[in-house]
Length: 387
Image (cartoon, rainbow, N blue to C red):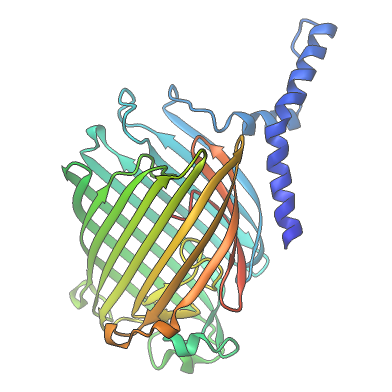
């Protein structure tokens, strides 16, 4: 696994040092001929990545693509492709953070495949914001059941195929300095197929659609959304999934989020993240809070630990080390529980790890993370910071 990681890092490092070789070849060209030598395919690829992180304020849409191998315990060896675009609706206002959009896809040896779009659009004068997250995946998965006690039994699970589609849209209006209020809508469809042991669902449906909406309030002073160097982000969101919208299970969800970013010394950023998810009512197995994944509690198989409620916190140090290269270290903790009165400190799970960053575009990083949890670990390949 580490061999694959070092291979990717070595490839990206070679791109940064290629500029020296380019200068030497240019001198040789001037000696041999005044006519420019047409670059071969490898030189063009190097040139593409060499220039990808340079600011391009003159371009209406600054778009780049990168791909690479990765490995994790749940999806095994795979090939990911990510594309990132930066744009401004008002091209004359450079004081605002640019809008961003990312397209991502993944295919692994386990049969897992994923397609998704994620982005934040900032309108002129930052009066309105539109956030979009849309994805579809198919995943040969494992299900331990609901609750900490089920999750901690590593070998007590059932195999099944999880096909999931999710669409989430937020539309916000600015009401004060850095403060926004808005509406949110969400649709999720989970089709659990080929359960080896269907009794793990305790009589719940295998195929569940959830449609809901609600309101949210945010405070956002981040200087750049995909990779903040400073600022605070706070979000409080309340969603409702009532029966009259066609939901087989009627429930409510409250989410709170707090993030803080600050500079420590040259090239160093300290980022902290606190996240809480609370479900009330008849919450289906497909919509309870899932611990683990590529953003919070890295190192855990996503969904091994799941319950109605979840609290997570993490602190990450991000250090730029040379040119476009950087490293990160983090530590965190998370807890899943059915009700607040049943929260147990002894059931809190640790998470920590180390990561490598390569600046794919200006302040947009490709990240390779190695997360470690309690009795398990995992690699991650993605674009943008985890939070």
